[in-house]
Length: 291
Ligand code: GUN
Image 1 (cartoon, rainbow, N blue to C red):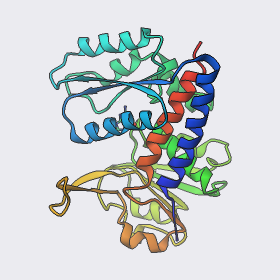
Image 2 (cartoon, helix red, strand yellow):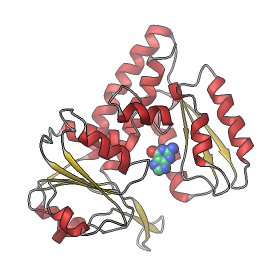
Image 3 (cartoon, rainbow, N blue to C red):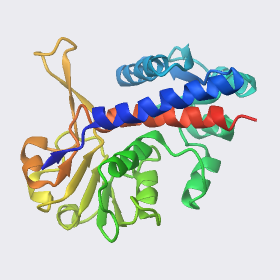
Image 4 (cartoon, protein in one colour):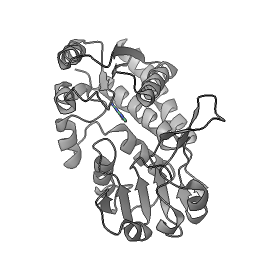
């Protein structure tokens, strides 16, 4: 069994981003700039966005964080997105999800200029992804693809099972794994909460991507010997032994599943780090294609 080490791969991606950002700046004097909008007090969102901003500084990007409290109106968020669309210095815009219930997520995402859509959530980005055209690919699935590439995981003709059908991970992941590319050449089954015989489907899989957000969901009996297991879960579970008061738990029962796998990602230290590296890569791409 080999660990797919998010730290190693994310650092390799970030080193390349740093070098390319320097070249970009030397070429036109412009520093890549990511703007993030964070609404409310969701603890996990707060952690993710703080990390995204810190990582921008690590690779020499500019960043702007715009915060709104939980009661912000859709009009206020709309105006903030429009202003960032118009700001020529800003290359990438992300609105951290989930949004408070009273704000229409689709309407806000639709407002982002597709040329600044570094999350790849805008319908134009999604449409291009489905058609195999060049576009911004959502950061978590892109990070997983970069990991498969780094470890040269064979995907041709393999059966991949993706558990979870979110727009952020499951759906784009299923598309990327089924495209006719070197690291995405699988037969894909997309499973979700209504899937019958999920255990049986998983047990036949060569590659499993668990992205449903239920800690420890994927157990050893659901995994074929030699399978590749990618754990996207990152749920906060109360843990009084930790200073923060919580531990991060993946969707995979790592202790019992790992010995059966050929490759597996840990939590933390796996996919989470790749998500941020992929976002930086997208932001650099947005800066490089700026007209
Ligand atoms: N919430 C969970 N993952 C993501 C992500 O990749 N981007 C944004 N904007 N929100 C998220």
